[in-house]
Length: 439
Image 1: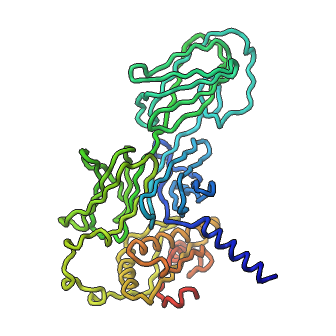
Image 2: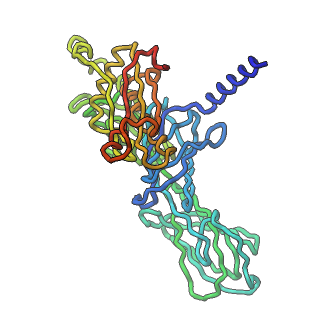
Image 3: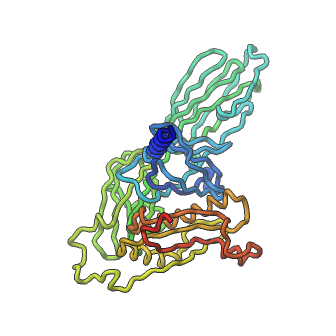
């Protein structure tokens, strides 16, 4: 009986592992629409199995979450802000970390004589709703960032009349004027191509005769290309363009990670020059779709043989005397960004592991004891993850890395001074024999 239960448990664990298989990481920052205020928001994924919560952004708006392999949509939720549902398009195999930047629209609170989000609707009863009135209201639709007027379709759903009325705003007619003949609670739906739709309510309980203009602002539906270049080289030059267009601004996170805002439906080309003056390697991406497109490029697979130097002129890592040893890397307080000064060491470790197939790495993350222990554990895991992902990006097999974050459990010094706490905010990188990785 125990054997049967054990087998059932193993099958269940295998099914659960398959159900939530992870394919890379998604990282970035979430702010309000101005880009100035970071937001703590929940990040979820839509998959074939339904909605899966991935994590949330921190107090600086930064997030770094594991991605399910079958992700089709990203959902961002934050109290008092409009929920975002963003399609996710995967171009090829996802490996490593992909970076994006997101901005959220605030929700209008329920009030009289001003549109507000339907999600904010509370119980409300109209008084004297049968009394005849003449209320003149105008509606304009604008871009939330540029404040530019937009062509849009507006539909009003009247509660009293049980009637729907739709009309279009155009560049020639950027404002609609409506005459309401009775007090009402009206649902408003606004759609504009390339923008997230707006669903709001309007409480009309005023009887003033002065016309008013409502400005409804829409957040642009994001089209983001996020590129992860595996085995990226220091000094590598990258650019992005569309046929007949000049180069498009690329947000560069580091040597191997880039993202950009694009126009959906166009085809793009991503060019890489391994070093200044080297022949450019070009990858074409046909008809980028609305939403987030993730693209992985591997330098080793894309360098043509004719551009590679003769083998006799390349010194192997062993010939260059590449060696590696254990090392402790230190992090600033509450930070998990890869320290720039650590990259030279990690580069040499990557080369060493690639040349010594029997060797692996044990990476252990630690924090000081300041703050919530649960958050410290997460922070230590993020520090380990960013180092592991950097090494994987340099070609180190994921199977050669044993990584764990342990929070503040194992300090090397008492947490009684800032200097001592600084020594506890660390990640230990140990080179091990592969057969001892699980010990």
